Length: 321
Image 1 (cartoon, rainbow, N blue to C red):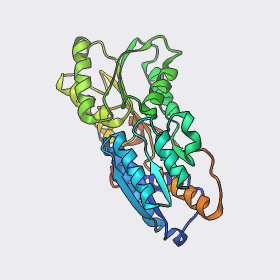
Image 2 (spheres, helix red, strand yellow; image 1 turned 180 degrees about the vertical axis):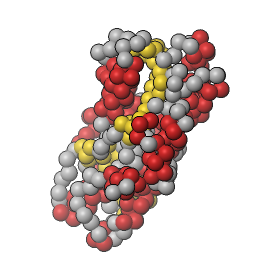
Image 3 (cartoon, rainbow, N blue to C red; image 1 turned 60 degrees about the vertical axis):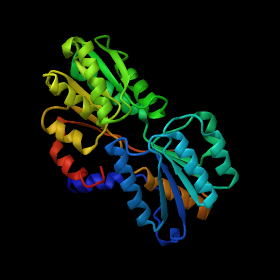
Image 4 (cartoon, rainbow, N blue to C red; image 1 turned 180 degrees about the horizontal axis):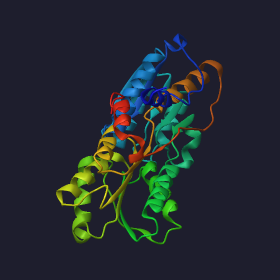
């Protein structure tokens, strides 16, 4: 099996049941965060493709990174009487009221990619997510191994403040470097998961750290922020990938182009196919009464420059990123 086939197989792995035309009359609403990153765009594209495979009427509401828009969308879906609701929550708190409304209407809710405050776990059917703490830990452990005992000051580009994935990726990275006294985070600030903000924050880090001379590595909670950070480093006369190590999360196509150019070092993959397992869980629940586990975990993988980055780029570039 070639690399493209392997990646496509991975993208659809983890489904619970094989389904077909029996889902043809089902309507599912999806409150998507927005398009803050290439990964998010891929998630939307792959979700549409997975819905089409199952003949599901799939309605997507773009929240433009605002929780109030997601709450409005969920209430609209409830009013329409959809069969289920998918939610990629922009933040972890503030969902109790609207999710109670969905539950009272007997409409199951499935979380995609991100979790919510544990107090709300009885308000949704299941969450299809990666282990974002593990993702951060893999990134941290890679950096510890690569630094090989040498002093390494790290600047961190955090995701959206209040998002569970940002909190978890930070915790995981800190866990990954905890046993290495030579590796320490010296600056940490949100870049809101966007390239533009990642570039802006990295520029401020460079100015604050002697023109970047005091920076050994950059850890970004997603690849888009890292792509922006790489641009900032190049404009400042630094050499990302050699003088400054980089490690980020998502494995979007553009980070592999940066790897191939020697400007990025490592990324931890987050599959964009959260919807496939979610559709199958809802279908099984609606048609057979099968209650899924509370958490359906997707797989993550570490990629480095040793993994033929241009081949990975070619395999991923048409997945909607």
